[in-house]
Length: 504
Image 1: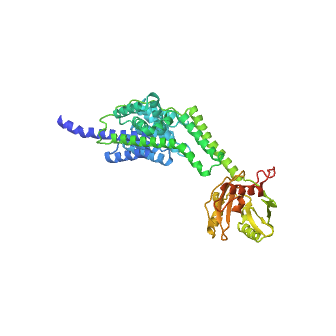
Image 2 (image 1 turned 120 degrees about the horizontal axis):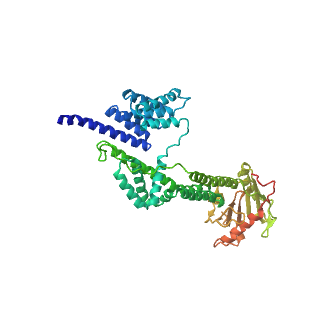
Image 3 (image 1 turned 60 degrees about the vertical axis):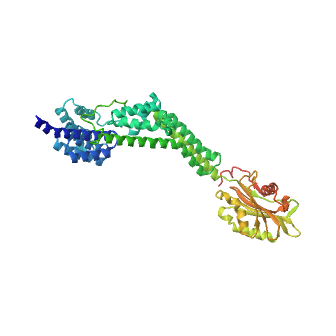
């Protein structure tokens, strides 16, 4: 009697080892870990020896990839298993399903073997689950079968159902208790890990995306679209569109959180199924309470996804077209100067005119299809200039934003004594203006105000006394007003006509 018990003990241990290995592989396949399931099945076959259930699971691990190469490997595994276990129902059922779902054009031989395997199952075990499964595959042959829900969809669905019934802390507590009682059920463990992660303080931002994904995603899509439109509406720099990505952050954080919960859960299940672990099953694994099946995407969910895509993509396209139109448009100007200003004459014959001409030539306005201008005002009898206004008109959309400060840079490079600059209101033409006081080598106090916009740039240089300034300080308001006045006297917007509208 004792001898019989000693002989059956190793057999029972081997049986338990095979059952544990099969349960481990089944869990991996159920959780979508096909590659890991194949490695575990092959390792168990190498360590424990041939087993029909492991051959069937290894073949299913290849077939789950839905790839021609893996289908070929699955068939080789099934044939290897049938060579050792000719009447094994699980291998026959898995092989029949593979053949019945194969392509008649690409794999005609495999396609013909499907009904033969199904018939053999009916002969060996009529009415068995394997025979019924093969019969169902025969009935579905040639029809498009619905895909199994992804692990991510199952996870979100289970978490949403739990949060609909309880607050997050209660739901997490109940889910952990149920998962602890059934540590081998991957779906229960994934749900527990997910709800535990959502119950943390940082999960408050993510829970609305789980509880009401349609409404929450639509709100984020509206905010994202509004952020896109704000950039051209407020004439903000293009790089500010990157801030719109902040509204995608909750979606990304939820995705990372869910993936982390799945990985932790799968690690716990593998640990529970590992030989010698505290959670290793003894004998058959007791069935866990079944969760509700995950329904396919409803029509409402599909239309909500379309609406979200439209709300995100539509404003982005409108903003891009709007920004491009803003970039392509620029103010058109023409230039004309009065013959006198502030009691001074416009100088036509002066040595300074030659200097102006060389300056405008050095600007190389021909490269931008621009037109330069330069005018002097002062004492016509002595030929001394007190005011200089020079610049250019044309397409200056790509001109750097700091072009108005180029005057100061030039003064700093000279021998002039340069004061502190300031940026006054550029006037009704807009753009940017910067004024800089300086004293030249003769000791005279001057002010230089440069402006720039998409259609013009220029500089007004004048003696400080012309703006009512003294040697004790610079009257910023008076100097800026003189510069704005001269800019608007010399540069005039062109009235748009049907011929000029749209020109670039």
